[in-house]
Image (cartoon, rainbow, N blue to C red; front, top):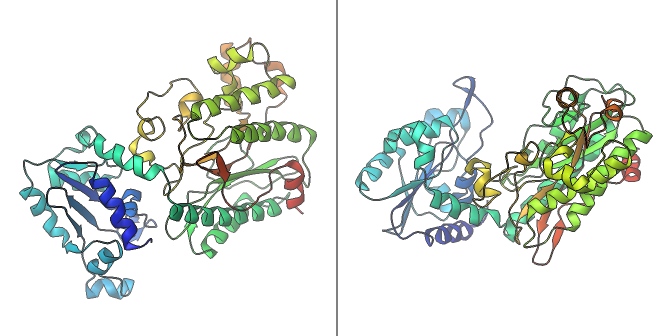
Length: 458
């Protein structure tokens, strides 16, 4: 947690954006896996964390703008609870840590909202079933209507604040990235023929937990890097394969890191692996060089696509007018996702509010295959923290589909592409801060070049 003053300042800045009414904040609840007492690891709602700092289930808060009063709602532990959990801070003690002086039982929240009838109660769009049920009980709004009736004004005010990271937040993110680098170094050293993906996933998880935090998101540890979010670890590494790790550490404050590394299973890259890896790394570095305040991230993304298309043409995988190829989306045979996304308390920061508002500032998204997966397109601003993660992926099902349809025959050499079937996927990812004049890579140095990756493998 930060100091009480930090949370008070955040709430005061938020309140200044509204003239009257109430702001309702719902914290998350425990979520059962297979029966009531066996729950998933608890994760607090990130906006609740941002404004109140409370990392405990069963809380809510109300800011009354007309009375300039903030109340935290929750329940103190009973003796039966303490038997299972041990002594935890009271609601009043937790509230004080977040700079809140007024507390009440959760049972008092409906009555407070009832007294506010006729005044505007703003709430954020819910993303969990338990939040939808609470809103239905508290405000009488059907779950199917809650998204439309949530406050866009509230959403935009929160995004504007959370998007620009303070020095305190950046320090936590860098701490997370440092641990994340250690996770990736361990994975590179372990990636050898005969090692199971599950063993590497276990090792990087151990490092995250040993550092006092947890994982920022489920580990991707796979020899099938062409599957962008591959979350099973059933394979044994074999000679000739590439191994991809996408994993990040989460700190006790819940600011996390998000890095991807790709390395050969063998001690050194094969000529073909070197060729593709170098194309990805070049696009990665060229994209980072463009990062500065005012630069639209969509422009940076398309620049990376153009860079990779040039190099793919040089090795015979693409052909023709590359400007037209990128404009029409032919390069998405090889790069199907976006170049990066905002990050902070969430790996894809504030994605629960919708990419149109977080990454596009209300502007429409493309519907084109590949480009529609770009999560961030808006002009960059100082304080933004984001990822840069270009990749090249050889997806057999996509190759077969487009080839059968005769799609982009003027841009893709399908005969050459067939020889790359089974080549997997390569992604390189770093986390960056947009500064007042440019950018800064966050965290300690990690292996990126072919020589550095091979040396890291030992």
